[in-house]
Length: 126
Ligand code: HEC
Ligand code: HEC
Ligand code: HEC
Ligand code: HEC
Image (cartoon, rainbow, N blue to C red; front, side, top):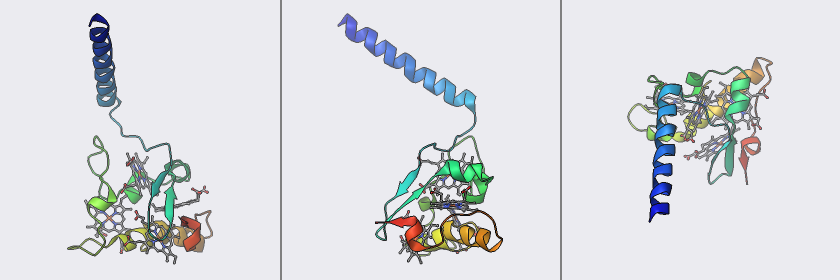
């Protein structure tokens, strides 16, 4: 019983330290591991670190992120399978306009800058 209590207090201590660190750190960090989006066309892997090293700013992609004391919303909280209200569908979110994945890669390529894949199979891996 005593052992259990000590264990419990230790967990409580760690949890509160993590909470304190998060509050005082103040800034939200980009995930350091690549994110994988499962997709019927083949999974797409997205690595923040490569993009941040290339000089991109968070808001170039997280274009609705204002309160940076909170993590950015997931793109799909707004972008759905089909266009909803004024929000373009997921397909456009990923492939159209200069701040989409494919759109940006294309624009950079056109400008002669180092860029990411523009072919389907460059992003979608089966
Ligand atoms: C090139 C585009 C791009 C840039 C630049 C970018 N992000 Fe992201 N980020 C994304 C995408 C796409 C997601 C996945 C969102 C989703 O799940 O819908 C994401 C997810 C996240 C998440 C949630 C991670 C998770 O595990 O779900 C955080 C936190 C985040 N980004 C922080 C940042 C910060 C901080 C920066 C700037 C230093 C940044 N991002 C720059 C595209 C980008
Ligand atoms: C709070 C809701 C919201 C979130 C979260 C959001 N978007 Fe959007 N997005 C919109 C709206 C509204 C528009 C249309 C108006 C505009 O362009 O600002 C849009 C437009 C876009 C467009 C232009 C598409 C086209 O057809 O021209 C792209 C690309 C895009 N968003 C990518 C993203 C990505 C990537 C994320 C996540 C990292 C994201 N959005 C998160 C609401 C959102
Ligand atoms: C605003 C511009 C921009 C946007 C938006 C963007 N990228 Fe990129 N991407 C780049 C640039 C620039 C590079 C080249 C970085 C380098 O090699 O230094 C790159 C490289 C890549 C690479 C090759 C490096 C690697 O990770 O293997 C992949 C894959 C990639 N991007 C996927 C994505 C995906 C998926 C998204 C959307 C979620 C996305 N990118 C959004 C600019 C962008
Ligand atoms: C630069 C990276 C990139 C390239 C190039 C690319 N895609 Fe995508 N694609 C994505 C991302 C990211 C998503 C969103 C994944 C998710 O979260 O569902 C996506 C989603 C899709 C979807 C699903 C849309 C939906 O409604 O859910 C289809 C279909 C698709 N891509 C087809 C293609 C085809 C066909 C090509 C080539 C002509 C292509 N993609 C090129 C990154 C890319």
